[in-house]
Length: 454
RNA sequence: GAGAGUGUAGCUCAGUCGGUUAGAGCAUCGGUUUGUGGUACCGAGGGUCGUGGGUUCGAGCCCCAUCAUUCUCCCCA
Image (cartoon, rainbow, N blue to C red; front, side, top):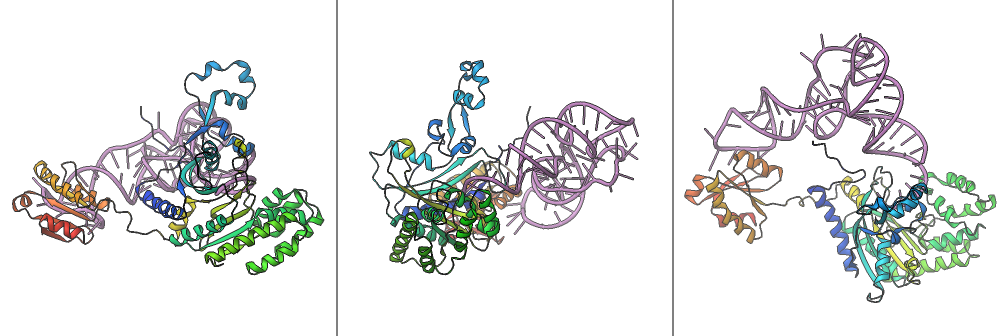
């Protein structure tokens, strides 16, 4: 019995054309990472659940793909285990899970190798991750993350360099972009300054939606979350912080006078800006945006977010600084700052704006076509010679009508074919066909190689 | 976790009020052309209408269940 094959939900195939385009993005990003001194790292697809569980909150634990133990796991289960419900049962039948992101495996790696690693340690990592949530537009159960992080230094030079890496990647890909920068300490300071200390998480989540739902709705949501009318009134001036980045700094300083954390945040941002200036980075494309929050709670310092202009799509890159990356594995005191490029969204942007280079799809340059066994044998040394000259070449492996062989060349977008029949065997002059123009020439094999390499 | 939609040929989709043998385009294969693709013309193959039940003289169409899948909210990349 055969049944129709199908893809597992939320997963995708990447055919040859898509792979060429994806590799273009990966190669561009990798080149920039390496130029800034980041080194490659790969970790296993699966990790022990003890490494993954409890790192992403309750909801994150639910979204982990768990791997069933091998062997007869059922014999270890008793009726009481079944009665206790699936959460406890899971721990008895599953000990491993697919990684949920690249940051936690990275933290595990750093902890396990802390004595061998040169600190600060700069690594980049491009691998798929898996999440068991419901797929929808632009969201998958398997997708790639493309991360670069530095651990083991608090220097704000790292933040400045991240800004430069973003600029270089976007410029290489020809994407017009807007980079927003904030600092998590400013958000903390803000909640202190408006008299809602300790509520910065709720404040951050709500304020992050500002450009999506507008100021009024944000206020409503904050009110629902228990912010007092007074706090909301104090918050209002924040929305009118406008002007150049330097002007924003000045206004912010007035607003956050009363908050130590807030002042620290401003100080960090100013220092970071000073480094950027020293590097020669201009403020073009870069915007200080104190309403940028980036949902996640683990950021503690700078926060970055990049959006593509000219196209209606969410953020394509994000990152920030987080303290105590390795704390959950018992090694406190290692701070990190990182950036993650959203490859799938960048792909969509390049596709929509037609920014992929177009001469990439060609893989084979030359196909040998023939009329039978004897002619095919004649091509084999020529095929080898072509490859030795660096020409991507292949021979049609079956005996088939020339029509079918040319059709194969056409579909594979092979630009040149050599046709060999009895005439060619006799004369030694081979027929070269240029598939784009349709022109044909009778040439010696050396002339053919020369022409193809033109 | 909550809500909405869609399942008909390999793919994208028509299918009228419930009515005879379920269609098209693309793709595949063959031919026009035994040595010429991308164009054209001719022809062929390909279906348990997601699955199971129900209503009916009669169901691709109506009802129930179930599975799959897409989208929205939550959350995130």
